[in-house]
Amino acid sequence: MNILLTGAAGYIGSHVARLLQQSGHEVFGADDLSTGFATRFDGKIEHVDLASADAVEALKAVFLANQIEAVVHLAARKQVGESVQKPEWYYLQNIGGLANLLTAMRETRVQKLLFSSSAAVYGMPEAQIITEDIHCQPINPYGETKLIGEWMVADAGKAWGLNHVSLRYFNVAGAGWEDLADTAVANLIPIAFAAIRAGEPVRVFGDDYPTDDGSCVRDYIHVLDLAEAHKSALEYLDQANREHSVFNVGTGTGASVFEVLAAIKEQTGVDFEVSIEPRRAGDPPKLCADVNRIQSTLNWQAENDLESIVASAWLAK
Ligand code: UFG
Image (cartoon, rainbow, N blue to C red; front, side, top):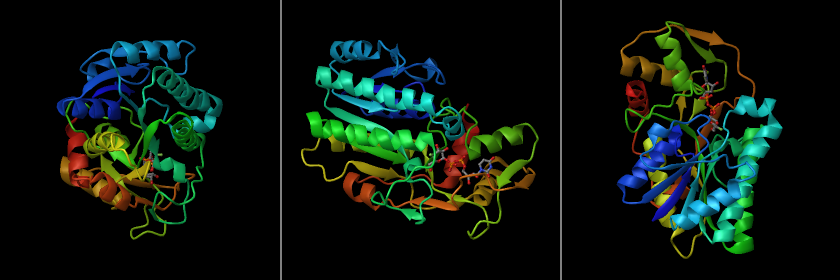
């Protein structure tokens, strides 16, 4: 299939691109290169800010020149804290960018879209194992833009027959190839690695949560498993009758911050100090995906455990 992948130069995008290419798909990239690196993607990248005034025409030209059949849309701003500080910019970028993309798709009759969503759409749910059907109540502009994005693609489905799937990623980490590290230092594992390499203690935000060891539990999903989920979802988009359009992507098993740090000590062989800090605002005690829907509908499940996530992340550059 000829696919346009937005965010192709990013950490997740480059994994999705490489896996799809190895599976025989023709992948064309689009990226504004604000946080990504063109060298991560083996192919041509259309340098475009999707939220810019000329994005619709630029995208239409790419669609027509390359007979694009499907779009995998990953390009977005994704820092929760920054989204609280600059909400208008997050709406402009994530919602404006998606509106331009949908406009270009509609005008060139590109009918298939895989949308990158997030567990951030759930907010602070009471349930600890989260099914796709619970009421979504995001607690920050980042999560809001992802939920609105899901609504936009669903509305395009109703209005002009867009075939769409949204994947709600849980905590993505690890590396599928050694040259595709998560360089952002924005999440627990890269933050811990940066602290360890600087000889500083790793901070644990709260050890008094109502969990087994008192630290927060999250569902860590290997980025290569996540990329495989995109491959399965693209095949699903080809089916005539699709029962679902929203899927959690996680393992279904949680790991606490202390368990992640223990895995890091074991996999790296480095002993490091841990400092217990106050709770971070807005952290739910436990967030874990119910993965029944994706397992039974897309026939996908995660293969990699926490140890392989940590080991692969440590080796990657
Ligand atoms: N944590 C620490 N110390 C740190 C960094 C994080 O203890 O130095 C803890 C956090 O408090 C949290 C856990 O590690 O309990 C994971 O934190 P991350 O910041 O890595 O991830 P979050 O679960 O907060 O959020 C991530 C993504 C979001 C996405 C969400 C979906 O960053 O974009 O998962 O579940 F929306």
